[in-house]
Image (cartoon, rainbow, N blue to C red; front, side, top):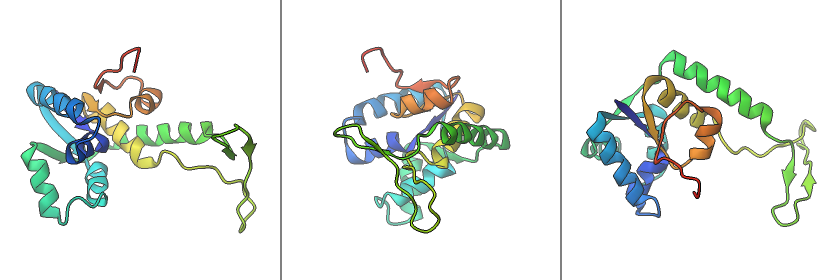
Length: 163
């Protein structure tokens, strides 16, 4: 079994947050079941976090956790693109006030096109496509996102009705 790991599960280990224990538990389970991998996108996101000062430090962290970097297949990248397209067409136009719920449209000063908030980016879809096509499962704490766009993907920790 090959388990892919999302950036958020590794950041939980680095910063000892609310997900640290769950991340450690799921990584232990993944090691017992087989290989643990990340895609190059996760590697880039970890390097962007600022926790590591060099490639060798990040590589040592991954080696300490027996995590290998693997590249997504073309099929995985294609699925990522399809998911991103579905997301882009579903994403609402404009902005909504968190306090009162009023919806507003804001236009670009340059071209007058309506602006929309960017929430998920293509990297999230590459992680999901890689885990779906090239791996058997994903460790992530963004379960709702991955269940929406990659419904056949096994995600750990498994969500429960009261999550």
